[in-house]
Image (tube, rainbow, N blue to C red; front, side):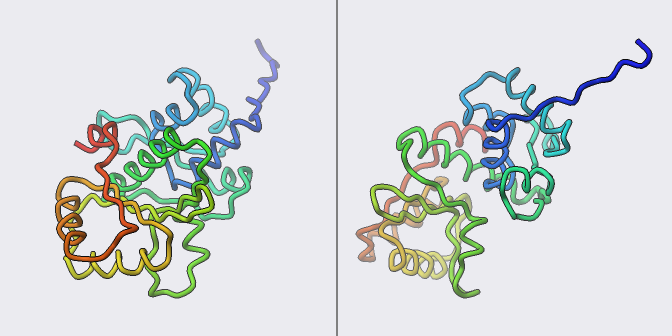
Length: 211
């Protein structure tokens, strides 16, 4: 009808909390957001409609046949209480961003009280440019656990240096690995005294997503 005023979709506090979670991870796939919220795809789509209406987030289909990615805008990041810059997706980094979020979902399912400190926050707390940046830090039971998600095989020398550094700085280090890195790190662990190092397979759901 002519003259009808269309009311804007109202964003709730829960919507902004979800947007904050997405912003901490740089971006997430829509199915991962649904897993985090514990809701069905239709509910996720309604949430995304509200965020897009307010220009708090953009939705991009970056890979054919896969769910769309949710990418917060600067306006959305500020609304969610985050001061990070907008993330620009690169195809080479999508698998790693995806895997880190799957690991976060996995850890949360096993330890709901664990606090996740994202890589973006760690980058701001970095003491020196030479300091290795973990993919995340989990705070649990008074301990600080460095989280590393490894999809590709690095050189033995570089891997050894990274693990040496992280085991000195944190109470424990947990590596979630694809098969190749898992074998390499297991071999190194057999040669070194890294009692605080844990080596895990990638979460089962994550392995299927990265095929």
